[in-house]
Image (cartoon, rainbow, N blue to C red; front, side):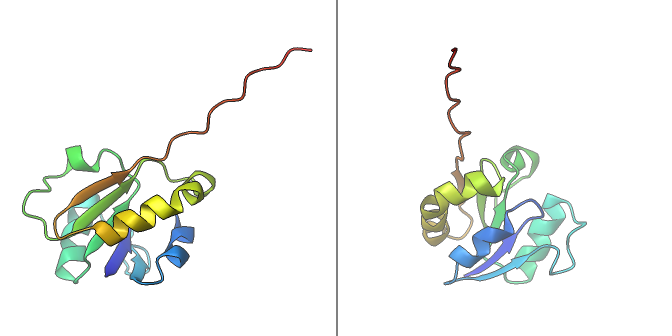
Length: 116
C-alpha cells in the first residue's frame, strides 16, 4: 500500500510500516498544501492511505466519495506514538478504500504528587 504522511505525522513511524511504501508530503513537494488539496493530489498520485495527526480533519474536509483511506493519530509526539505502534500498524493494515480510522493516543496518566 502507498502511504502518505502529512507534515505532522511522526516520521519514526515509517520504519514500522516496512510492508508499505511510505512517503511524506515534504518528500513529494507537497508540504505547503492544505489538507483538502493534499488529499486530492495524493489520491490522483495513487496513494492509498493518508496518515495525519489532525483530529479535526474529518470535520474540516468533505470526505464523502474519497478513494484514499485516512488514518488519524490522536496525538503526534513520537514518545507517545511509539507506545501505540501495534495499534497503528493494525489500523494501516485494516484500511480499506475510502475508510476513516482514528487511533487514539492518550496522554500518560499523571503520577500522584507525593508529599514528604
